[in-house]
Length: 465
Image: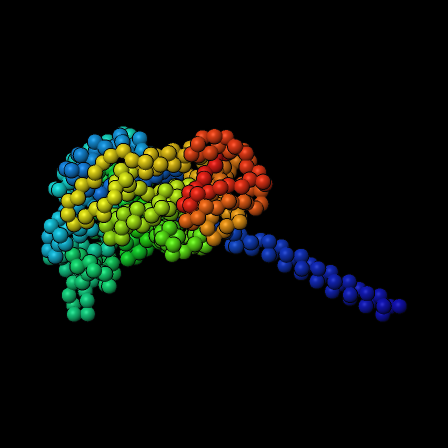
C-alpha cells in the first residue's frame, strides 16, 4: 500500500509538472506572438487627395498649336470639367542636341535638370501653370528622367566619372535598347544620388509641383528612391508614380506603379490573342502579390503606346470602350493620354511637332461620365480607401468578365463581354443580386437569381447600388 501511495505521488508529480510545462509553453507561445503579427507593407502615407483621383498625361509639345505652358494653361478648366485631378507633364527640361533624334529631339534626353525647355516657355510660365492648376483643385507632377542624361548634359564634362561606361571605357546608352540619344548615369556614385535628389527637391520648392512620374524607375536603385521620398515629403506631401511594375517600389518610395500587365492582358483579349482568363491571371497576381494599400495605374494609351505601338483604336479595336470602362471601374487609378478625349486617331509624332486636333467626341463623354461615377462611388476609390474586386461566376467565364466592388455604403456590379459574339449571361452565387441603377440608361432595375443579361459583342453593363 505504501508503495502504491509513493507511485501515485510520483505519477501525480509528473502529471502536474507536465501540465505546468504545457501551460508555460502555451503562455510563452502566446507572449511571443507579437513578433509574428502582420505589418503594413506600405510604409508611406498616400496624400489624401489621391483617394479617388484620375491622372492625365500632358505632352506639352503636342497639346496645342503653340506647344507651350501658357497655351496648355488655357485648357485647365476643360480638364477640370472632364474630371482630371493629377496632371502629369512630360519632361520640361532642355533637350540635348548631340545625337538628337529628329529635329526637336526626345524630351527624355535631358540636357539640364535645372532648366525649362524654351520650346515650352519660361520658369515663370511653369509656375503660373502649376498655380492655375492648384487654384482649380488639381495637382501637377513632373516627368523625371533619373536613369540617364543627354550626351551634352553639362555633367558629362564636369563629372565624367558620374557616368556608366561600356567594356571599352566609353559612355554608353542603356544596354540593349535603341536609346542612342542618351547615356547612363552610375548610381554606384553617392555624388550622383545627391545631385539627383537635390534637383528633385528644387522643383518642389521652386515651382511647387506635387510629385513626379519617374521614367524607367526600376533601372535606378530602390534605396535611392526610398531616400528621395523621405526628403521630398519633408518639404511637402508628394505623389510618386513609377514607370515600373514591382511590389517593392510601393513600400517606401512610390504611391503608384504602372499596370503594364493589365494593359497587355486587355489588349491581347481585344485582338483575339487571349481570352478572359488572361484578366483572371492579372487580377490574381495584383491582389496576391501587390500590397493592399497600393495603387496601380490602368490605361489604354500613353505616349509610348500611342507613338510606337498604335492608337487606342489600333490597340483595342471594337473592345475599346469596354477597355476604357474597365480601366476606371476596376482596381487602379485610370490614366488618360492627351487627345483620347478628342478621339485622336493618329500616332502623335515623338520627335517632331504634331499638334492634337481638339474636338468634342463620345470617348471624352464616356471618360467624363466614368470619372464622375468613380469619384462618387466610394467602393471604386484607390488603395486603402477603395474595395477589392470580387469575381461573380457566370456561364461564359472565358468570354465574360463579371465582378462586384462593394462596401457598407456603395456597390457596383460590372459585366464585360470581351468577345465578338452575343452572350446570354447567367450568374452564379448571390453576391450580384439587388436593386440597382443602370449606368448607361439611368433606369432602376432588380437583379435576382433568374436574371439573364443579353450582351452584344464587346459590350458591357455597369450597375450601381
